[in-house]
Image 1 (cartoon, rainbow, N blue to C red):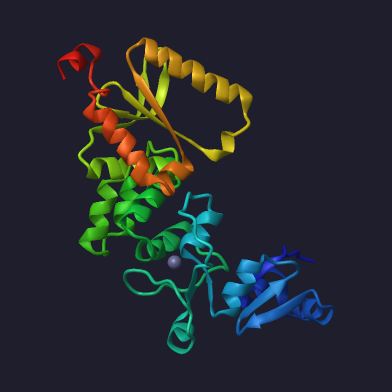
Image 2 (cartoon, protein in one colour):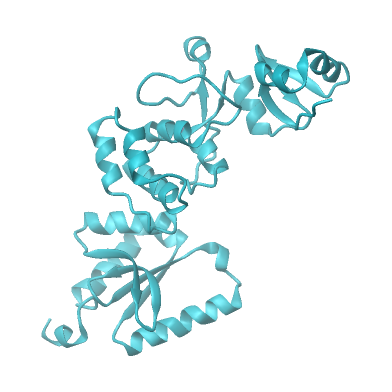
Amino acid sequence: MNAIRSGVYPYREIERMIGRARLNELIRRGHAEQLRRGWYRIGEARGDDVAAVRRGGVVSCLSALERHGVWVPADDRLHVRGNSWAVQHLRGPFCRQFGRPVPEAGAVDDLPTALRHAARCLDAEGFVVVCDSVLNLRLMHVEELEYLFRDAPKSVRLLIDECDPNAESGPESMARRRLRAHRVPVRTQVTIDEVGRVDLLIGDFLIIEIDGWEIHGDRPHFQSDRTRDATAFDLGYHTLRFTYDDIVFRWRATLEKILRAVRNGTHMRPAQRAQH
Ligand SMILES: [Zn+2]
């Protein structure tokens, strides 16, 4: 007999995998239940999948992107896109995409569908951050992104030009974009001889490193960061280190520190600084 893994499935898929009789048997034994017309839970399914299908849709947008491993801004809500009946008859909230709705395929949307919905849920910065992550993880090429949003408003398509596949974290993408908005000359993931690759380089000599919280308590990493900073300093560089919280929750203070360093000419070649 064909097997089926625990999860939430549309009926047509269950029928293809195990057939109607086997589904009825699972329901009788309490191992499966109907969530809504045409959709069933088999075994222990994820709570989000069950909730989305019960609400008349499927997991999409930011919630689905997170499941695909994409970096998304912190958001506690379950992002659901409703089917056409649900959108007309239920309150939602439902995420929407640019252009016509597409049919549901599984309980969790594929990456392109989730991304098209996220484009309407996120602000400009959030969209760039998410697309950076998609590119950095090599889940899509920039040409695929452009094609995916070919019928989206121009404001969305212009944001794709701002994306940078080099960005290694959401806060790094945010810092890059916000600094450029202040006309700070910033480059991403620059390799410096003897120092290695740095997150952001302002001008030629001001290094900005954004430390992920996941390296806290990692002693070798902590040590190598300090050694790198000392080497960089010997070569005339200045390093400013910030955390996720510095970028996401304390941006004004962080920006002020960076702008002060730039005003002091820290980003210039040491010989130029004296004349600055
Ligand atoms: Zn959404």
